[in-house]
Image 1 (cartoon, rainbow, N blue to C red):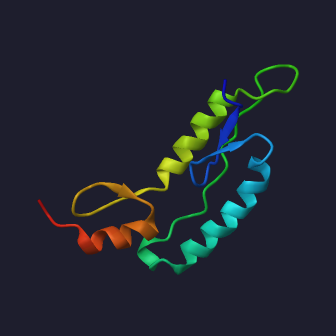
Image 2 (spheres, helix red, strand yellow; image 1 turned 135 degrees about the vertical axis):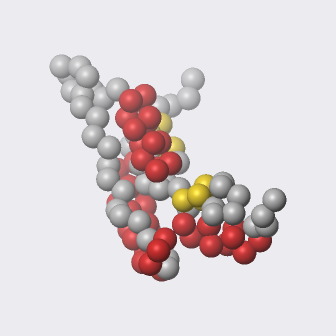
Image 3 (spheres, rainbow, N blue to C red; image 1 turned 180 degrees about the vertical axis):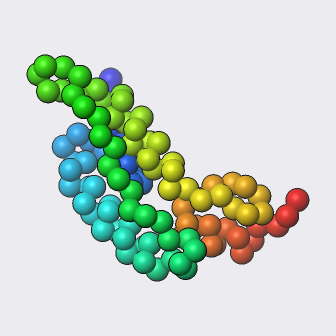
Length: 103
């Protein structure tokens, strides 16, 4: 059985329950640096951490609900290509559009 993993709401990658609290501030800092380098029309508003309330009296979180909300948040940051419609992170969209050809 795999150890429990938590999905980062910024980048969509999985991290262990102990390391997610270390990763998220670093990931958000990196997101701001990359976002500031983008052309103005591709800049996005800062991703907000999804709120999932505890489901048990003991204060535990439903990990599946938390991961689902984080995954949706990460997917909302993707931008569609005007030519082919595929979605990319804004910094990758610029690279993709250099080689994307209309069908």
